[in-house]
Amino acid sequence: MPRTGLSLPTLPDSADISSYLLSRVLTADDIKPPKALLHRVTGKGELAEVVYILRPVVYALAMQYWSRSPEGRKSWQPWLLGLSIEYGARQLAKRDLQERRAGGLRGLTGLEKEELRKRGWGLGWWVMRGAFYENVTKMWIHSITGTLRNKPLLDMVGGIVEDYEFLWDQYYFSTATL
Image (tube, rainbow, N blue to C red; front, side, top):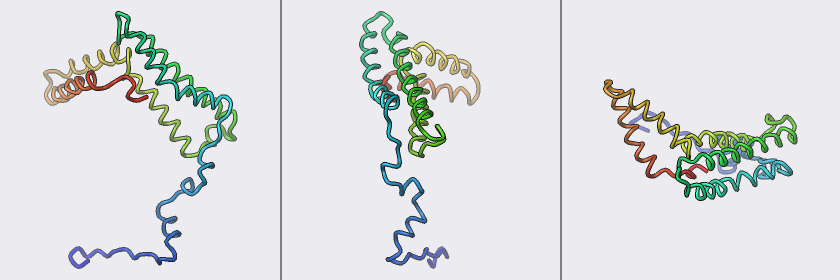
């Protein structure tokens, strides 16, 4: 490259493309056959997966049922039911993995570890859902933005959070992360 002084990397021989790609991109998990990426689930693990799949339906039905009460969105029953189902499914799956896998949770593939991590974060999203958000998180946000008022630069942060609160209240729905 005359202007920059950099040189282009050499291209591999056309007969050697597969070894070039293997050395650059793929990991050991990437070249495993699909059946080796996940362990087969049976018994408790299968029950845990069914419960995990049905949890958004149960939560939505509970929200619909308890929304008729005077408390409406502030009712704790659907929130507690949904959180219990998600936590129960997670614990059931972890127990099954520990009992049936050699090495317990350490014997999981990368894909299984990633899925467990994602489900762990899913438990954290319950602070932005249902009664917990209406009764606790919203009050916590108001107290923080209230303490930031009339303080240089921090007032701007509080204002941004208050502006986004409108979006959370109007556009976020309780099953968005299920």
